[in-house]
Image (cartoon, rainbow, N blue to C red; front, side, top):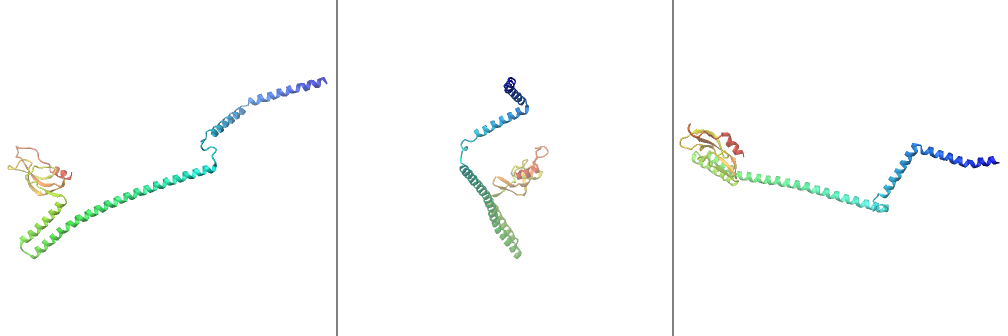
Length: 235
């Protein structure tokens, strides 16, 4: 009897000792420690996600959220429509400007060609008069009439002839075709003209092709370059 009581009284202690031994064995297991850390981190992340949301959206009714989304989609659609309309208006403006420019060039070309037609008429009259008459004066008068008409045409469009003979050589207006020694003209003076030059506004339309005087063997060594006038006329 006494022995049985001693065994029963000792059993809880043995149980606790075994439990403590098991707990100590589990705490020493590395896998349990890792699992505990993962669970702790997961709980922390869940708590941050729940506490870090937008306070204006948290707890909002799903129907209200759906309406807000629909409103935003409508706003995006309106902005896209405005952008496409602006893009189309810009493209139409470019096309309109290009068409107006082409139309302006066409009208100017028509006006230029229309002004040339009277010159053609005068040439036809001069040829007809020359065929029906043996008097050279009539032929000359017809050609002079055509020339005056053509010069008037050029003058009306801003083209004026350049007078080169007697002027100092200017590479911007003259093209030296020849150089001759002359005792009666200062060096670098234009003494003859092969074809006349013309000026449009303040620019040389075509330089005059000229002959330039140069001094004797003992006078000035500088001579105008025949290429300088050609280059000057292109500027």
